[in-house]
Length: 286
Image: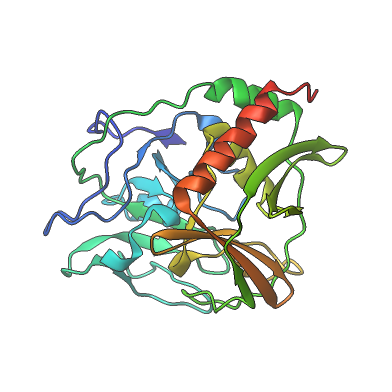
């Protein structure tokens, strides 16, 4: 099901437009372990943020000119335009529906209600970065198999849109940290801002990916959606918990149609998450 393209960069690299050479994605690297691949019964993207893989699906086989599956939050949304809107999302029934701003067809993006999310591009690599292997990845995946991530309740309150509306309140915390907790329901995550703790709402598979890769999923505000089913019918759209807004990153906690947001610099988020994973690895959690 998963294959590797023959021509791959030796390290992390962005995918670029074949016409104008502008970067279409953040730097990405090959999927380091196939256990990080999405499940067949899942709605979410096949690969976690920061990675790519060639995942053969009926749609990608039909559009074989764009062989690489990526996570939508690695797409530089400002550099592309998308077309082919269906009943409640984008489709690619008529061929490639992603174009670079210069007009070149560069791939396809699908998030229609009746299908899983897919982003596929062609492998036009930009200048590579130094490789950054994920130390301890396989050991963490082994630990995670013994501490399955818990399902945390999400509150559907954000309507379908490329943009999340303004929050009810915005706070810049003085103190901020993440924690990973193992309880009767499995592994769960929480954050503490200025002494107030709350659950970190991530789907179980995304939480496992974030722990294994020591990388908290951070979404582009214009692609800030997570997906599920309501009464086995259409998707419920809710905002991602962590969003990138310009140079800052915000943590949004939704309850119904209301939201409150903590705004923290992105590097602080990544460091705090890595420290939480380190504490989890070093704790007698079994």
